[in-house]
Image (cartoon, protein in one colour):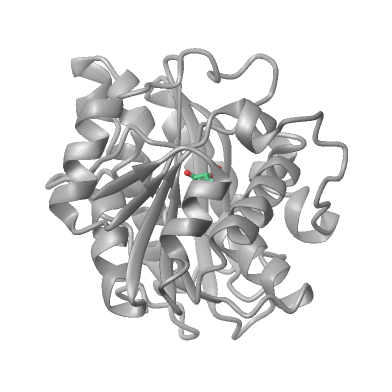
Length: 284
Ligand code: PAF
């Protein structure tokens, strides 16, 4: 695997290729990221990953400074997963001047759920992803469904700007107990780690209630939040939304359940897609 730190080197390395497949990351890689890299491989003639911890998408009180930087192990893992080229710019390279041109996603999609609790998050994500896509110019880019709203925001950005890039969704990789893999799981203490699967179980319980005919969505969301709170969590939201645009659903809509909650000082997110008949499915 070749490693480059500048846009010029990246472009020189990519010159012989026509169809790069790209996986952007912030490093601290786990099996979920590596599954995205393996998924990217057949999507192009060269597989590119990036590692860049993007200051723009962190709020001032969030974990930008302490976000785990695990360079050596990240490189080994990417190499083993079949990544051909790693682009790892520093801040000076990607933001050589203050980034005053920003990509502003629509409020209806980006100021709800994650965007409500992390104002400006999706401006930061869209801006860096736009810039990384401009650097790599991939044929396809793979984003995980674990960050469900992020995937949707980026898909629409690429569509509205008519970028000739296929956005490919990667399934969420889970630990044997069902916890969605996340770089932030590393912050959990042993007892928190044992508890952490309860977020995914809360979403499953909501799915079961919907399947059994529950129609009062507000009450269902409230009850799920209360159950988690009773176990010591601080839930931000547990929400039943329409899959197509993350708005409040109408009867018959395909649904997705999304949750975000803090366990101790660690904020976890997860989601679960349902079929139009409201039965829990394997994500498509
Ligand atoms: O999902 C992430 O790791 C980040 O939000 C991304 C897409 C790499 C942009 O910084």
